[in-house]
Length: 284
Ligand code: SAM
Image (cartoon, rainbow, N blue to C red; front, top):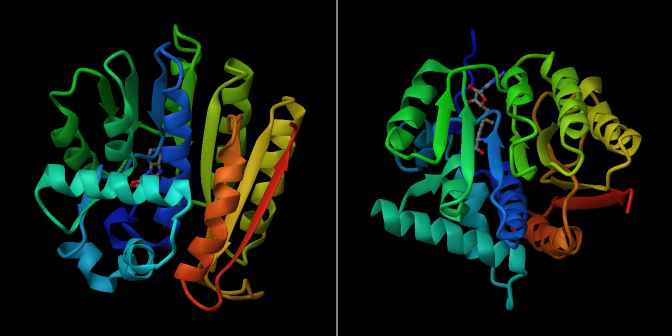
């Protein structure tokens, strides 16, 4: 049984990195008129309230979205101003200053009338919240099913353009192999699919091996990739907690690597004195 609830972590440093990268990828998809399919294999609840319930318990967002909003850098790198603008727009729409958009909400704000979305979520309570939010939205299909397994049937979409976010909780050890297999299958079915994978920086061997396994998969399929990592403290052998996180993107599109390269040092500095970052790329 799954016990992970994303509300505990909403708006933390990992969400900021992932959502900045996602917004950059969405913006690039919308540069062409042709419709695209957005797939969120691990969608969560869709939206969160930072001053209520789980999010208010550990207040992880204080070291993430709130820390970034306080960072005084002029001019802010584009990826960060785009992110802060999106958060602000979402809050105005919800009429609450503590609202925080999950990846489905960020995507829905970026989708055009011709685009479509599919959201998968296994947790019963989060699925209900997701479904309630998007029940009347004709561009979206929500399903309480395994996102990894469900992806296959959606690819390739008729327009042959897709952006896929894979954001597992890694609560199950099998998620590490499953995400690599899903990226491979995704690229096999649609070579130009933009696939964004979030992953935690943890001492466990499967986590350490994951970015290289993803890079090898993209390279085998002959696709360009980038791997952006942001740590808030050094990764120490034997440590149990997450020291930071990374985003791996296959087929990132023109300029996304440069955008993230500009944003990462600012994020690392905003998230504390031990913050660090790495950006790798290949296949282009
Ligand atoms: N993508 C969301 C965002 O950025 O707002 C956060 C998603 S959270 C990190 C991961 C979610 O995946 C959890 O809500 C969990 O219940 C769900 N989940 C875990 N395994 C899943 C699976 N195989 N298929 C679909 N959802 C899954």
